[in-house]
Image 1 (tube, helix red, strand yellow):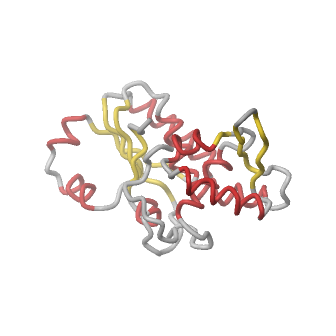
Image 2: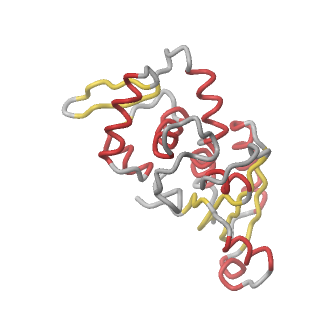
Length: 201
């Protein structure tokens, strides 16, 4: 999920403020969206953009809470969601709806030929950036490039089925995104947006 968010603030997340911090929500979200896969601390840092020291602290806390598990692999520690936890089904469902959209949409749209940039905007992005309010009923996605709109729509439908939320894509060319002065694009540039692609490596 590398560098998906514009801000690296540790403010409590507006989407699901029961979590201690945004980093904790992002880390849990990544692990639970990819339940069944294990990651090293360095790999989690690369994929989420969360500093390694912060990941290590959160891993210790979450292991003690029984929400994730750690196993040795040579010199490394591999971290994964604790699928055997009694909280796993309900917590994964919550995290898919809250932290999952950025992870799932990034994975889906990265497979579509011609997608050069992608962002989440609208109410979901506002909540992600910490603005409190009702849970978003859907997810608005901006896709920039020369991708086939039908392929983008198919990827968003598949992501929506996985997330349990409708995903509404808007497809623009690079020229439209860079040069247009329409009210819609001016508003997009002013409001919080959550970057999906390109992701930093």
